[in-house]
Image 1 (cartoon, rainbow, N blue to C red):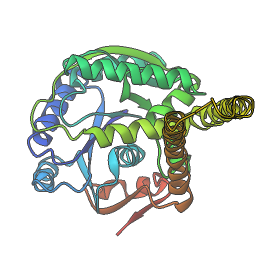
Image 2 (image 1 turned 135 degrees about the vertical axis):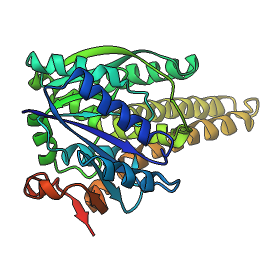
Image 3 (image 1 turned 180 degrees about the vertical axis):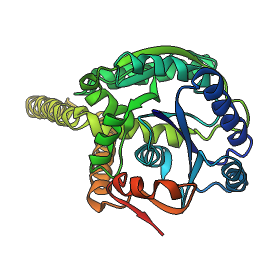
Length: 330
């Protein structure tokens, strides 16, 4: 019997872990009884009682597993690592807050049965505030146009991934993996198909997304998949240097030819200093983001460090083959 893995990353989701596990189990019993299943929660160092709840859930159903991280490894590393620890013939990452509809799992599986090794869920609309969805649309279109890889608009990573693609993920040697970019880069080779859906509201609890986390995601995609920042700095710097030279030359000629009558004043100097200084600071910031990205990769820290595993005893042999690079357990 083929097995389907559902991987659910969580952080302070005490109100959602039990309902989402019950919803997934019920879905398998009703819609996909012909498949075996496993549900893997990977907890990013929750502090609200989520771990206690997960231990009880795992104790009641040995097909539900859990990995507890020693600290919060961010919104990209932890889900990526969780996907690499699954043992099914395909893996479906699912948000713990019900914003990824559980009822789409049978739809994904049907496409998988038709031969598609990657099924990507695309948000055609969302019940989040309209301004947020609009800003996301601008972001996706901007990255898509600037990237050397054809990025997928309104794709969060929700979808289905065949075990052959999961095997590829395990081989990647990247300490800051960006699953959206990886799927966009290699998806065509896995007969990828897209399924549109409307993203519902979070069922319970508060969102963990804030300006910093969204900015972090934007900069990771920007610095990993585009050269625009550095190339723009080069071109704008050249243009500003040429304009500054021309303006300086004109002022010098005007001063020499009208020594007593030409008064430049301090306004042009002040405007020039602030304008050029602003451009310099902007592109120094861009360069800093690229350097930070490089530094993180050069340091080569583990993607995740585990504190505890639950219900993995039967898969000890499989776990060794599922070890992703740059991980540790304590």
